[in-house]
Structure formats: structure tokens, C-alpha cells
Length: 461
Image (cartoon, rainbow, N blue to C red; front, side, top):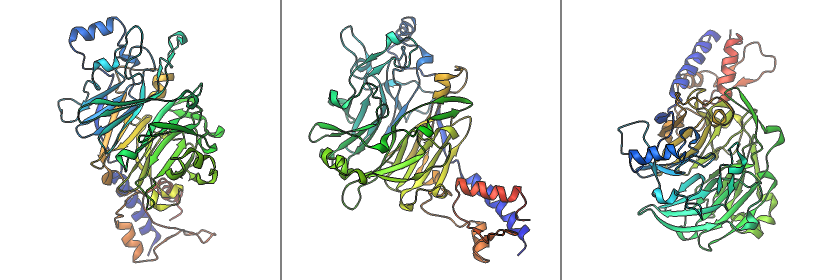
């Protein structure tokens, strides 16, 4: 068989797989966020009083439950009228819908003596028991240039009944579990037993994990070296904007229950290239966690320039989805692969215009993947353009999103595989002195790079 034929097949392989990727669809997009005010007059009054400053509103987290898409808008700056909202997914009249305050406007209204019921959540999680868990950071105006406007309240968990939107419970974190620079930005819920549910809240500001027991209505803080940032991974560059972040533990992905009825928590600091894991057996009891340092495992790394913020595991397929903020991308890893290596990681979506800063990832109970991008580094450090599309919500069925990637749970034979199976099962590099071969396999970042390199430099001529 001539090597030219193999070269042609490789080109076809690349074109075929590339066109099969990026299966996500943009469902919603906004230039600026707006809200369903009680009346046009109420909206104008909010604008006049600066209770609503459009350019200060940026979506940070999302969640989907039944026919509602929840969106958090933290009070980074003044002028955020409602920090937890939803969209009716059955309303297809617009792709830029106004946000409806959840559970109502009253929950977001300040009075003279106390903050509102919901202060400033970054991310939320709807569990399988029909409860919405809101991790409230408690900070107001912490990104405002005027530091006198910054206010700090104790972080808390706020839990609602999604069947009637009534408040079920509010749990304020004890003072000894909150540090001076704490920042609680992400939450994972272990809900295999509705009465024995555990919430895991990541403190990216002071490298800790607060574990809350629903049954005991109690919490404890766990520390570990793996929660801390990597000093070699604190340099970020998004869309040409260079900045330094020292965010600690951020990404949380909770597996389905294992054979021992405990789950595996996959986690990573944002300022890191590495992924880690621990069984929740060691998290449900503070004493056990403190005495089992080696229970926390280092799985591997994502490669250079591959810092990640949010992550989420689809419990059905066992696929871990995670953002790659510097690369304007979302990637995946099939946890059943065991080896957390670059060749086992697949690209789900990459676009330098539409996927600028993927900030949250979820899989709903109908097996759909949801991703929110919000251009936050540009909003925070660059030139913000209110005439450009700044926020997007993407979605696709999980099986479509992972199709023809290293995470595909039903690998499909393609034309190159068929050709190779009838020959040598490997592509021999002509003229190579090492005697190595390149194995044809699922599409990964490494596959694209290597095959493109061989073709570009004429190695297969």
C-alpha cells in the first residue's frame, strides 16, 4: 500500500472527525442581561436609582431542572437587582429572554437593616430529590473599584423546594469554617439518599472544602495540599488579556455511587494543570479525612496552558466535562479510562469567539449537556462592548457532545480504521529511525496535532 494513500485517508479522517465534533448548539445569547421587572415603570425606577446598572450584570452559573434554566448573577458590582433567576425553557419566543427572579423579587430586596434572602450566589445545584441548593458567597460589590462599597456577610447554603419554590432551610457556615479571604464559588451534591445528602462547597480563596450533612444539619471544613493553587499555573491569558489568578480548589465533579455506595469526588484548583480525586468515604467524617492524607489521589495533568474552572460528571456515562479557560474550550475525560493523560482527553467544543471563558457546566436529568460562557476576563480587565454578544448558553445531548472524541462511549469505526484493520493496524512512519508507530484511535487533541504535523512536514510522503 502506498504511503500517499494513507496520507489521503488521514486527511479524510481529520476532516470527518472535525466535522463530527463541536455538536453544541447555542440556545441563548445576550449582549446585556435584563430582568422581568414588575412593570416598565419599575424598570425605569431601577435604572434611575442605579439599582439596575446593565453593564454590571454578568451571569456566572447555570442549572437546569425540568422546564427551568437557572442563572446566577453575583453582586460583583453595584446595580445587580436579582442574583438568582430562571428562564422558562418552554418559551421559544426569543433567544435573549429576560431573567425572572427566583423565587420572587422579595428574596432579592434590600431593606435598611438587613441583606436580602439571597445575597450573591455563584453556582447552584438541583438535586434528584427536587431541591435547589444555593451556595451564597455572601459578598457584595467585592469587584467594585470603590472599596467602601464592599460588604461581607457570612456564606450560607439556601435550599428550596422546587415543586413549590418554598424555602426549606438556610444554613449559615460557622465562623471557624470561613477565613478572611474565603470565596465559595462551587458546589457538588451527593444525593443517592435524600435524607442523607451531603453538600461539598469549594473555597477557592482559602483552599478548603466545607462538607455539609443534611441529616445532621452540621458542617466541617477539610484541608489538603491538593486544594492549593500551583504557583506555576497562576498566569492566564484569555483573548490577549494577561492576568494572574491564584484561585485554589474550584472544579468539582461527583461520580455516581460506587460499589461501596460512596462516590468519587474529582476536583482541581483553578490555578493548576492537574486533576485529583478522593472517595467521599473520607469526606463524610472530618476525623477520617484528617487522618487519611493518602486517600487523596493525583490523577494526572491536562498539559500546558490547560487551567480549568468548572467541571461536572455525567453520572450515566461517567464522563467528566471541564472548561479550558485559556483555550476557549470545553474538554472531557472518560473516568473508566483510569489514566488521566492527554491522549485520553477529548475536545467537546473550541471557539475563540463564542466560547470565551466557559464559566459553568452541567448535565441535566435528561442527559443534556449545558455550558455557559461569559467573557469574564474581558468584563473585568478589558474593554466591554454592550453592542456585542457577551453571554451564551450552549447545549447538546451528552451522547452527541462526546461522539467521535476520546470520551465516546460507543466508538464508531471510520474509514481510516477500516483501512488500517485490513493492513497493519498501525501507521508506520516512513523514514523514522525510532521504529515507533502512531496508533489510530479516538479523536483527541494529541491526535489532531500529530496527524497534522505528519502531513504538514511531509513525513508520510
